[in-house]
Amino acid sequence: MSFTGANHPHFNKGNNMKNVMIVITLMLTACASTPPPTAQNIPMNINAPAVQLRYEAQVQQMSRQEVINATQDCEQAGMRASPVMSKRQVSGMLSDIIIDVQCIPRYRIF
Image (cartoon, rainbow, N blue to C red; front, top):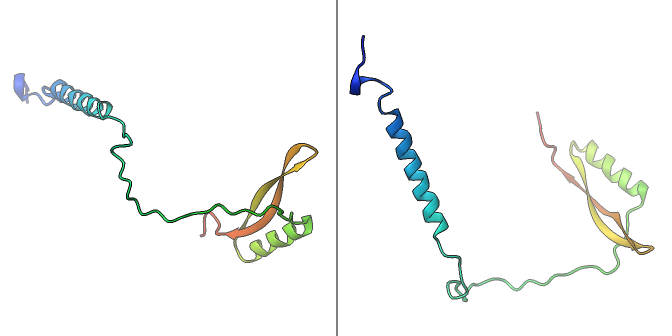
């Protein structure tokens, strides 16, 4: 079987690539020409709940044995321990401290 001219299977391959490139160029141009949002475009009647940031001035550090016991409890329950960290200033330097240990599901359960 002999393919000649327009009957060849790869005859329109170049035209298809040109069409794809034109579409990609048009899409990128459309995205680049979109103006950034301004204050006039943002509605002011958004019903957002009032949120207050609350924190404890004095956070108690868990002892080493408390962390070990909490980790073992998580492992016995078939979960993994995830420590909750905070920072405390010691001698002018920030130091990480563990304030809680949470049990979270393992990554893969088989």
